[in-house]
Length: 152
Image (cartoon, rainbow, N blue to C red):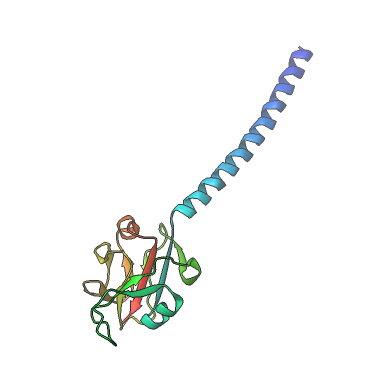
């Protein structure tokens, strides 16, 4: 009986050590999943005037007719290469509201997002007034992880 009790005690101790080891592995796996999730849901936004955003290289003017000194019909577009340092990072799962510096001014969405997936106080096409409330997160962020808002 004493030998059997000692064997069972040894088995219990081995299993306790194994449980501690598995708990450590589980914690490590949970951390990795959180890190991958954060990276997957990382998004960025920037709000500024046309001049500021052109100087930073966030937006460019494209198209238009070339009439000597002026180019009528040019449109604003996101730059082909964007530097995340110029943007405010956010987690798509957590962000529900993009605050604008002055809610009385008009802002234009230059990036690929649609205002159909957002709620704003006033809207005209891709322009709006007031803070930008994201109503449908997946739909809003699907076209691009970079949101560019130009103050008009």
